[in-house]
Image (cartoon, rainbow over all chains, first blue to last red; front, top):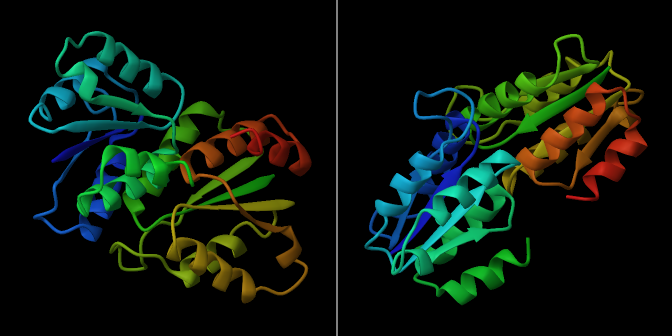
Length: 126
Length: 126
């Protein structure tokens, strides 16, 4: 199972992206999508604690990919990762790819059971 | 005035992105953001007619930029552009950039009155 965490200032964006991806991959696919956009009280913004909770919700996954859109979304993800300890920390990749296009490509590859290395190879083509 | 058209399979994504951009640029900025995600009946998908209506809603703009996410969103935008006639057709650019990151960068530049050429220069850095 692979975890794909979606981080944006807007919860609408990550909710919509999760729906869009889940329409493309079957329910039995080895991929879990988490919508982590917005603050804890649903305003525009990001929350390192929300991202941290998302990472722990994927602790049974062998790999956890975090996709962010802009600026402080990336910073919040970095703060969350800094708060982790091993062994979960080494499972987490903060991916340098566009949020929608990257998460979509990664989820498709993960849904067919592709390896972390092949997922990154696919992402390098975006 | 510049028009920025947001196209995705998900209306939640383009609604959220419009909100996120409008929080960053002042109301008096010379930029108009249109959320054109989803089908005409609010399902996941895209609609060339919705995009065409969006382009005509920006006919008073000197430049119109269309940002899409994946696959058939781009195809629907191409179909809409094909249906245009001059002089509006030459105002329209289908931008090869990631939806969120591209539209955000373009809107910020447009909001400070930057030229089409400078907006594309900024987009080339993404």
